[in-house]
Length: 175
Image (tube, rainbow, N blue to C red; front, side, top):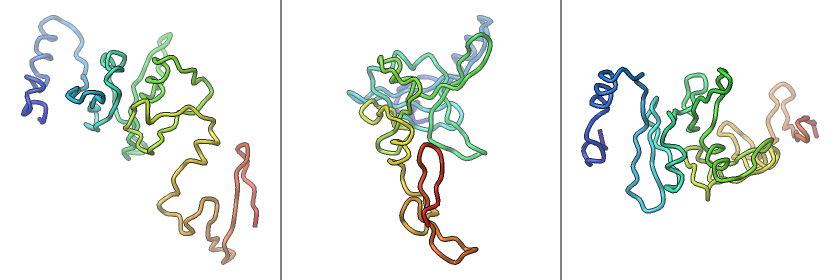
């Protein structure tokens, strides 16, 4: 609707769908993009309409794919993804990883972290390649954390505070 009002597009998509039906092509949802800013592009996912950001120089890499918001048990996550096919097998490709790969970064076996903790912000300045443990260290404290510190929690059964750390994917009780 906003794109129609601002005249960034001339149709809600029905004209494109109608022309595709006439030509016999398969109809596929398309993302809407706003490229008005000098450096940052804005896209909208086709399933939830989530606004996501990317560098305008990456527009040619992403424009031909159907980007959707990842849902986790019906909950919105803010992560932008698509389904790609290799040898007739589907696999998920996340926009933040896709952008860095297309820009020549080797991310195999690594984690791509959103520095500002906003998974819909996929500008290269907001992305860093790191090890998984570095990503965990940079995580925000969960909203249900009662201690205000990572790894510290109230054990109701023992009626005392407990401390745990995780090293190399193994959790250790400190006390």
